[in-house]
Length: 145
Image (cartoon, rainbow, N blue to C red; front, side):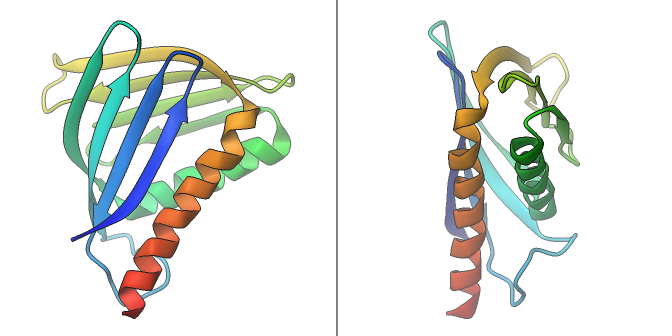
């Protein structure tokens, strides 16, 4: 398993870092059956939480494409609900470029849920999309080796 990289969802006083680890496969884009391990770190001024989970790599592909659409349209809503329901994310952007994030991070049992709600703006989206792109570039270069 290789470290494919990290992406961060940022607010003014909130940071969610997600490190992605996956097994290289011999194709350019992940299949529907490709699992990845993620290490999630959520930080606000009041708390810090960290845990590991599994996701499907196609979820990140879909998330990346939805973010690109959101950035191009400069309005709308995207939703990411991981297959295992450990990550539930909704981002809503108004026409002024403000993004309202609602994120549920669930650890094994619904009573161990961390709910975050925060604001950011569209200026963070290009870096987030670039981080996701480099995760897939890293995976492709490992597959070619």
